[in-house]
Length: 158
Image (cartoon, rainbow, N blue to C red; front, side, top):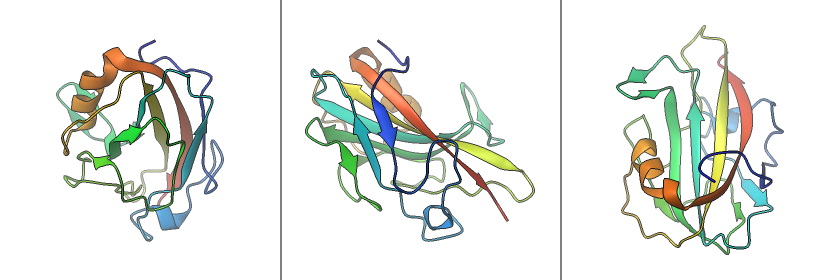
């Protein structure tokens, strides 16, 4: 399957696809992760990972682009939702250099950015160490991804 979009659906009560992410979920607000829920995961999904990435950010590193806001993994296959401000499972390292969620905060005057919240279903349970970057995580899980989808929100700094 790799990273092709699947029939699995990702939603949030905080914003609709293509809609504005509320300020409370940004660096200008409480900086708490939005609640997320997914449906339609394959029967063989044994664990999940969640990523939030801003491809519009003016950050380019060798082999990478954009800005990573959240890397969360080792989510059991029995889970199908994350509460707002979730503080469970295993956090990777975001591009703020920290573990956990770091909300949208594009440079002033940079216009609207699109934030891709992605859920990936894996056909194996994972017990990966904390602190993986998005690239490290994707490299490790790619052979086991059986489904994925995304929810895209927007944010424009005032």
